[in-house]
Image 1: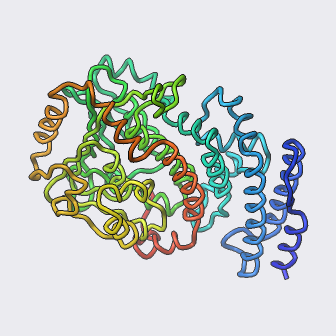
Image 2: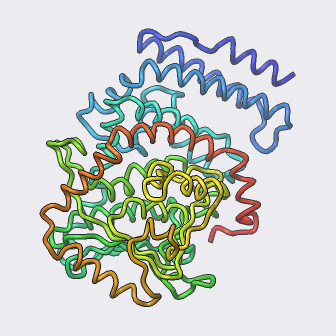
Image 3: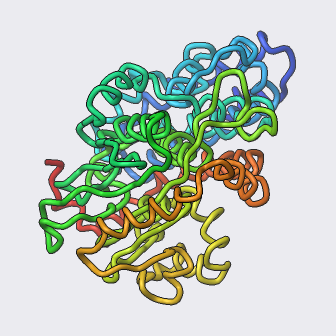
Length: 453
């Protein structure tokens, strides 16, 4: 009975048409408020019975459908109001909350998301799916989407204040990441040693600032990405590149949905495209980015997100015992831009096997060498990095940025990237809150028995 009454109530109130922006904002916001009221009458997860859970899902579906209708008509108007007609840049992790203030109910507020973060992932109501619906609509709009990509390629707000420290000491330690200059190269070290250098909400800002500083350093010509020495498991005392997303924090509900977009539109895309300038659109022929070539060093393993980093490197070194995996199926998520980029290296069949069937790629294998340029003996990585730096900078850097851009415009122009992430934003939002994700983490990660710290 609860499901029937709730569903009919939601359907009767749902706006079906669109027209004037201001009037639609009022009408749709009222409906979203009514939907929230209906949900508040039902038990929160996990207290509800099957009928109550289905009733809640019916209300959510009706509200999400209406958000899509509203955004299909008004996303550009909303984006113009949030950015003053594209005259100011707002990062994606702030834009979703500005949208909540501009059009109440369109996306969740900071307070609502903060309250959800106290719950296990399995007990969340999935309110952040509305952020995915919104960002997907923004990215799907060519004008708004390009501007948002531009915003995410600008230096992080925390970068400028650390530049004097880098100039003074040739090193900046940001906790979860470190950047230092050695000869011609800026080295970025990702550090989460207790969790095999996994990425999560506690590491992302530091990692992005480190990448910014490496690119901005006027005294280096090339950048190196490497993992820190880890403290646990059979790799204890060894460097590893990284184990991807921190599945323990994910299971405990500490990784917000917007983290995925902040990461791939920010740090990963900066490595690939460089840093943009406010006055020049990235990848525009007359508006070039500030960029340097990147060397990736795979020691031990590159799992998940760390394998994704290799797909934006200009040169990849790998230990002879190292391996790469994209265990997205076991995690229940989309592996960033790997679906877009991996087939360029391995071909479609191997890419599908890696992403959809968990195929492990040994770096020293024929398939692994499609991604890795050079395989070196364990213990020889320091020397190999120095040799690669010398090789890639030995003839000067005059044409390096030009050649990187030429590859990009042929393989992954900005609009292709933008369209991919318009889909990704929507699909990843549903994956992030899927019951299948929880089942996968419990089955494949033993998540119930793992503690946060």
